Length: 113
Length: 114
Image 1 (tube, rainbow over the protein chains, first blue to last red):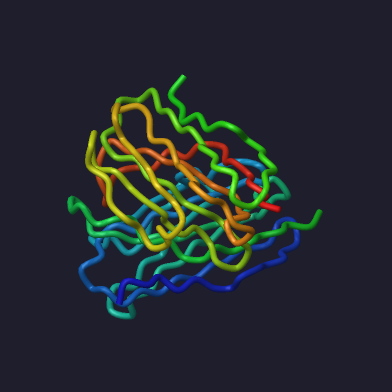
Image 2: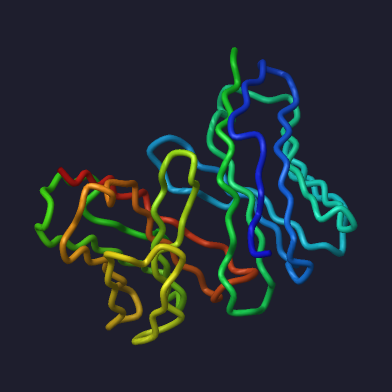
């Protein structure tokens, strides 16, 4: 029940296309859903996060969509660029608790020029 | 500059030779954690610490030790490394334990055990 399932494991998108990464969770107590971005040779860094009181959050070309009833959330990257090529991790936790962040297994995104 | 610093960044060692990977943060964060990253397995938590002298096991603690004697430092100790500990290791810190706190990661330490 503590797992976060992420798909796909890898994704190839053409420049200008839309990249979509999906995550699903079981624990209904989760109420904080961040996405981390990791470039080769670097540590992950927080990209964008959402709480379940909203169904969508947008920051520039990056959008999180959240479906509470389906227990799913997804990251959409609009107008994908080669500079977006990275590994993306979704995560979930119980906000305000001392429970650790639970990470998905990651999606390696390659954006082709 | 706010950062999490790990050393060494790269290390090749042999089975059984004790090693320590250091981690230091300059953000006065209470929460610190160690992860290992392996292809197809994502980020798996090894140990974490809520505060000084408070440490706890994560998902894959076997073969590792940690200590938290100072707030800024959280070293990872491999008493007797084995080849299955060959991995990319990340230290992370956060102002809040667990949920809601942004995790700040170091740049990673790539360890090879022969």
